[in-house]
Image 1 (cartoon, rainbow, N blue to C red):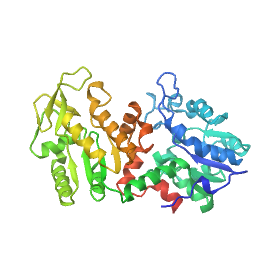
Image 2 (cartoon, helix red, strand yellow; image 1 turned 60 degrees about the vertical axis):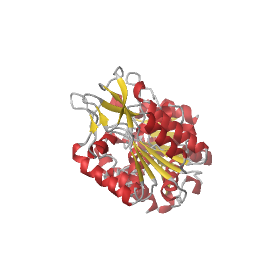
Image 3 (cartoon, rainbow, N blue to C red; image 1 turned 135 degrees about the vertical axis):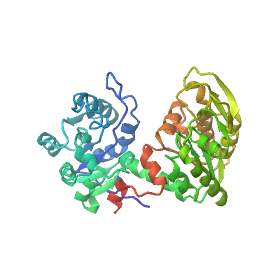
Image 4 (cartoon, rainbow, N blue to C red; image 1 turned 90 degrees about the horizontal axis):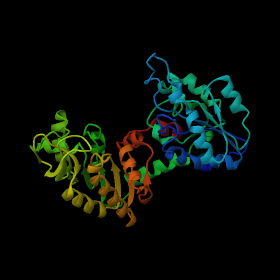
Length: 407
């Protein structure tokens, strides 16, 4: 898939309306940006427009203000205003960023209409309007008035048919709707994993629930040579095969499905790897008592919270022999120091395989958090900014935010 990007146009004298994903974590007291990754990743696209001699109108959401109302039923503007990201955005761009207190007010339209080349305006949180998530056409048409060109650089929301990510594109002709650099990199990295003829292709899947990854596993059974399963979801597979998992996380209504997936993998000659041993704990807490146990023989009152030595060795060996690697989801409760060894070892194996020439894509909030926490983000081929969007892309779904521009 060849994508039409900002590289294909000169923005001199044009206003670019850029959908970014500035849904960033903020300090609960000071509301300062605590992780600027998403803002930083939008900088190249914004700078391309400015360097061409164009101006930029940025639009984004922040949190879910209409779902997290204050006790009196009103919107918590203090918590959800995008004004909190102006300082960080200005610093990263090296130009002062103007701010519109609303995204479709007269003031906002005056500010965007009078932008000079080289200037940047950020609109207030789109999700202060219910029309945004509803994909309302009238709301999208109003937003479209802010720019001559529409640029979607928000891969993290590409799986949503919202007004600003999808519907707004209807109000621009084919020459004036494009992808930003981030969006293009996300799609080309995903395509590389899905279409590469290089083998072996290993998918590493972790996280709590099998139910969250069913479609992904089924889709990968047609593409991967190895599927590594870690995290809480592994214990549903062990219980399905008659193992004892103690108090470990389990989805009892998915036991049959787990057996079906094992059978499908076998039929398609895909190696489905489960962690043979676990680090188990007597409670879900940082100060829990721990020991090692075979994953299918966990004593009552104990729960598996990380993969252990044998599993780490087997998984690492498979990863190091791979040419294409997709990693989505941690191997254990890596937020607690006692249960981070498995996830850290897998991150290190992925980094080492990448250094040996493999192409590695890390996607999904928790695995991204893990490679950042262990300082390995720069040692993998690509770190995706879009958890849900990346998941749906690999499940084979068409993403509305992409289709809106590619047609």
